[in-house]
Every structure is written in C-alpha cells, then in structure tokens.
Amino acid sequence: MVTMPDISIAIYTLTRHGLRLAKRLATALGATIYASHRHVDEKGIHGFTSLPELINTTFSRYDGHIFITAAGIAVRCIGPLLKSKDVDPAVVCMDQEGQFAVSLLSGHLGGANELAVRCAECIGGHPVITTATDSTGVPSMDMLAQARGLVIGNIDRIKTINGSLLDTTQVQLFDPDDTLGLADNPRFTPVESPEDWKPERPGVWVSFRTDCPDDAALRLYPRVLMLGVGCRRGVAEEEITRHIHAVFDAAGLALQSVGGLASVTAKADEPGLLQAAERLNVTPEFFEKSHLETIDTPNPSGTVLRRMGVESVSEAAAIILSDNGKLLVEKTKTKTVTLAVARRRPC
Image 1 (cartoon, helix red, strand yellow):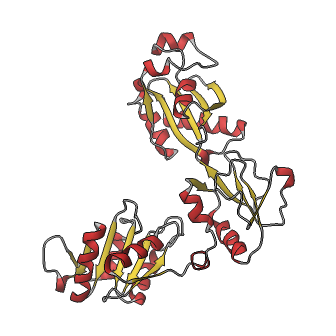
Image 2 (tube, one colour):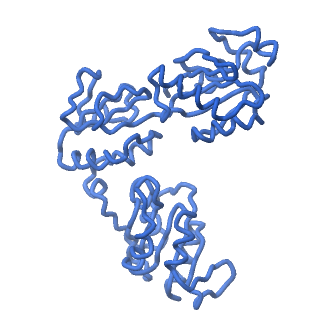
Image 3 (cartoon, rainbow, N blue to C red):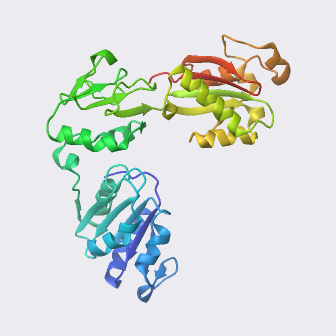
C-alpha cells in the first residue's frame, strides 16, 4: 500500500459510469469531485458545463488531478496551463472502468506516479508508470532529492543526470555527508574535493555552500543552515533580508540551504521578521528568554541583556534551532539587525 502525503486532489468525470468510480476514489483519497452537470446526483459534487474552462480555474488550486476521461481530453485541457516540472501538479488519467491509472504529468516531483499507484490500489486496477528511471530501476535524482529534503538548484540538469544514469554512464558525486545515501551505489563515482572534480563528466554536487566548480553540475542544497535573528522594533523586511544576503555572500553560504529562522518570543509579532521568514520559505520559531539564556555563546552582549533581558538572541537562537549544531557565522550586526548562522547537527 502506497502512503500518499496530505495533498488536495480533484477528480473530473464526464459520464455517469465514471462518476461511480469517482465516488469510490474520493472516499479513499479525500478528493473533491467535479462531474458533468448532467450527472450531478447528490450534494457535495460540483457540476460543470465546460471542462477546459473549469480546469483553467482549478489547475493551480489542487496538488493532484485525476481525469476519468480519455487521455486526449486531459491533455488538451492541461496543455495550455503547463509551466515546468517543479511547479506543475500531478495529473493521472483513468478509464471509466478503472482498469488503468496512467501517470500523465509530474510523475516524480509532483507525485503523479505515487498517485497513480494509489488510485490503482483503491479500485483494483493497474498503475501505468512511463518515467524511464522507474521502469528500469535507476534512481531518479529529482525524486531522491525530494525524499532527502534537498533543494534543486538547477532543475534543468535533472534530465542530463537521469539520462546519464539510464545510459549507464558513471556520474561523479560530491556529497561529503552522504546526504543522498549513494556512497556505495556503483553508478556513482565519489569525489572527495573540488580539485578532483572533472567538468567534462556529468556530476551531482551536494553542498550548503556556493562552492560548486562546475556550472553544468546538478546542484543540490541540504536545508541545514539555521538563522538566529535579532532586530529592532519596526525594522523593515528589506533590511533583514539585505543583511542575510550580505552575510551569506561573504561567507560563501547558499541561501537555498536555509532551513529555519528563529528569534526571541518578544519578536513573534514583528512584521518585518515574519515577512523575511516567508521570503526564505521557512516557518519562524521563537524561543523564551529562559531557554536562550541556557546557551553558551561566543559573543554575549550587555546591550542585548539590558534591552531584551538575555545576553544573546541571534547566536543562542541559531544554536537551539540547529539542535546544538556548529556556529558557522558568529553574530554579525547592522544598526537594526543581528544575525548568526548555525549548521544543523547531522542525524
């Protein structure tokens, strides 16, 4: 049994027979049903008169879409709306008898392969997966990166790396912490240092730093950098993010590897700080002063103690958020913002 993540799913059907199948799937998947208005027979089912017009409004609203229609109908509906594999939702197409569940779009990152398998399990049909890495048993780098919580820096290189693996070409791999878990995989050649990297060969570079020596390499970023931030009341988001960018540039750290941001609870309602966290795509955390003061930090401040009642905010918050990890950047400050960066302790 495939366990699906908690995603929003829409099911579309044009026939009464297809509606019966849609109801079975909706019960199992917690999905919303859209049916031709001629066949809407109970509350909770949304009717439509034009499927293309409906898809224009729902395509970006749901994480997954299941079409109980001919594949051609689904393709014509979604074609004008497609953007790229890292943002397009999962699309699965099924026949109204439920014999086949075809992963049609975003099989890997969007989760359509998993959704197709789940649909088939629900109704006793057969999943149809056509992505080459799945059919040959080769590790797919986009799926592996997603499963390991890595940010893909240049998604256009996924095709190159997956293609090399399918062609049984050795792929060089810089991954000092074995974040991908491929250290013993015979398809990859470990690279110990940037000096050993060969730009003419396909490769994957895993790092929280901006140290990749090859623009053609697939760059993956582990989200292990935890920010501790202090700020004056009323500071603008732009001032906070400007300082973060400046510090990261100076330290050679990758913004894609930011995994969290924390401060003291007194800043939990600070708009600029909350907006900065949103821009970094992290959920901010706030710690009580009693928790912060238990942390030994290299740069305690009497000024911070007088203002906030604790000797350290940025360094202490970064260390706590990183599970007592190593400070990579000690407290840096402007007139309005303090920042420290710690690396999360490896599991």
